[in-house]
Length: 478
Image (cartoon, rainbow, N blue to C red; front, side, top):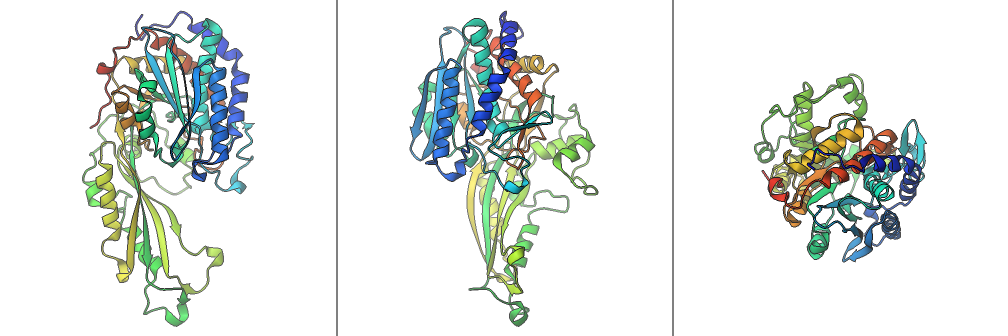
């Protein structure tokens, strides 16, 4: 067999998958009901409950050596494996069971911890990011077990509980358990398709650097009528600093970041489909507000391959509590998404220096760096990539596309290298309408079914690959 050959038991596994769909959705709903918010801290009881629930799901799918593993300073990790196919390759499947906070409860059309189906989508916090990603592979394992008694390849799982806070302990965990997690291919289930019904393999990720800037001028608030005029306003000073971050087209204006970014577009996204009206609707862009890019290729490039700056929070007096006063200080959180290949540490230093330079009105400016993670540039070549593309095409009923991801998963490159330079396949069940991290997060149920089919097919096609494929499909670091 080759990577383009279907396993002879694939049809039976797909039939078993369809028969098991109700049970899989019920298990997904049970996971969504657990409010495992990693921002609550590593000792959160809900995170412990979430880890135990995931372990039960993995054990129920036939995995062996399932364990909830503690790690200093981290929520529990969940691991498990089924390694009874000598001579066949081993897939290491990564996911995360932690979720983002629910946000504003008033904006949810149904409670975030009570999954609800509406209009072909399942709503709930974490349903798409990343519990459905985990369940696609659980569903595939259950299907192969029902149809053939066992999966046709060796499989290992690592499910962490702190991805949403930057995976600060993942590197140390991998170092401690490297032999236990050794594999031939890494499968990450935490990315987005190009659109509903359009399967995608993600081949690049942007990096991210974040810093908090505080502008201060006074010991305390003062009456703006008595003191306004001679005294500087820290809020205006902060606004001036933030306005310097980008040019009139919204492009990053920090020289050390802008000058080290690749020039583009370079033609790699020219063949991708693009519907401007749909793109605007999916983003929620208001009528009359233009995009900052011109055309499909420039839009994809700006989203996946170029740096961008975002002011994600401004901390000052709430409008409802405001009075006619000059506030003593104001602060903001600034994040810069980096192009794949940009040096995160150097870019964070550049961001901090830029924010601190030339304080408006002579105010005191302090900058505190937060997280910094590099991007990733993979390769679209090799037998594992071909097998994944064929599996997605069969699962979704149409060819897959190769895309970038504007988001950041900083551990992908070091993860793959920590495992010996194995290839990394990034695929998932999110779509542009899933609103991951926002209120009313949801999962497109038909796409979930297709993703499960693709996961079944991937295991079948992987069985045709040997265990010597790593050198032909390295993770590339530009």
